[in-house]
Image 1 (cartoon, rainbow, N blue to C red):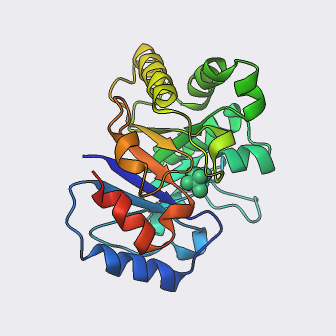
Image 2 (image 1 turned 90 degrees about the horizontal axis):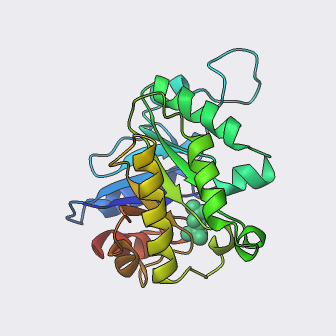
Length: 233
Ligand code: PGA
């Protein structure tokens, strides 16, 4: 069983989500399928797809205009939430500390956070990939809160870039991540790979040890692109 997660980012509509949910009825898979949609598309329920959000407030409730709390996401039938996506880190200056707080709020309300980490091209070129990954894991995961979490490794330079690391690179980073998680007492935490996953590379990427699934952006928007990824494993 693999975890195939779509991240719709700021794309789609309620009608398009309905099309995806209907298209999913035709496939027979043992894989777990999650789609993380913009807040306005939450509220849907499907027996084949779990719905997630893409962000959550780091506050429980109160005077935070425009923010959406973990409890509200639960109330809108979300089961998962992406936290610390690189676009939130880049455009909204989210730090590991903020991400940890958000993940904590998610867990305390019963959501499963999908915690994203990954290095920029600059960090990669400076040979800092493993250092960034390790601090990302240790500082973003609220390991004191014993609950299910999912980790997504997304090399930031490969997102939406039609570019993926080599199989060997993915293998090395995922093994490294699994070791750190074990050291943190989080053995068995699913580790997703994300960045430029599509129908042609999904099966090979998911055959790598310690790759428990994928987080798919662009190729998750249309059933024609997303379903082949789900059916590839
Ligand atoms: P991509 O995005 O698949 O379009 O590269 C992945 C992500 O940002 O989660």
